[in-house]
Amino acid sequence: MNARLRRGGYGMRVLLAAVLGVVLGAAILVGVRTEITSLRYELHSLRDDEARLRSEVEKLRVEAAVLTAPERLEARARELGLSYPRPGQVVSLPPSIATATRP
Image (cartoon, rainbow, N blue to C red; front, top):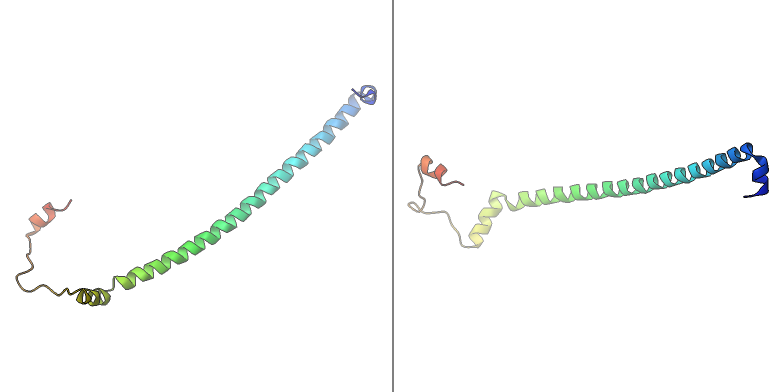
């Protein structure tokens, strides 16, 4: 141990402990602030992703609405050679049978 530390006694130890505490506290503060900054960047990136995905979902909803429009489906069915059923081709089931066959 240093001779000055031995001679300085209690006061020098307290000073050394205080300096060490300040340095350690400053290091912890810098680490915490760095983590906060990193988390802020990550949060900003996630918000951008969320906005992009919400926009994409809205575009897909519009596309689904267009694709399932009755006029479009009817036109597409005609292109495929489909037509409305003729009389006698449709069989109606009584409600008791229709509900019994549902899973």
